[in-house]
Amino acid sequence: MGFLLRFVSFWYDFIVGDDWAVAVGVVGALAISALVAHAGKAAWWIMPVAVVVLLLISLWRATAKA
Image (cartoon, rainbow, N blue to C red; front, top):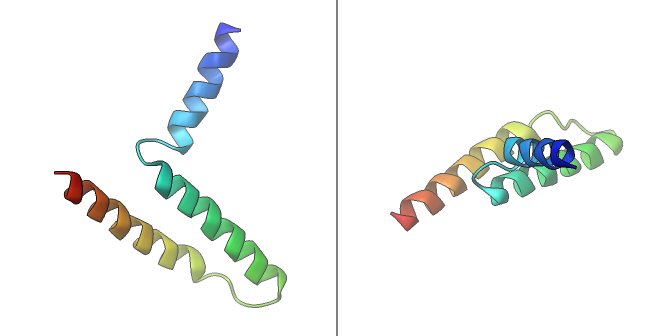
């Protein structure tokens, strides 16, 4: 059981890290990209825009705490 707990803990820390909101935003952006691509439209631009927006939100939240 100890191995399983450490394994899950590693992946949680690796994926979520310090900011759960960014992790949720990335999952949401991937879902939107999949939906747009499934509709036959160009979806390549969604992830770069999402990364920039999520970075700005993360920086804003971090500086607001300080």
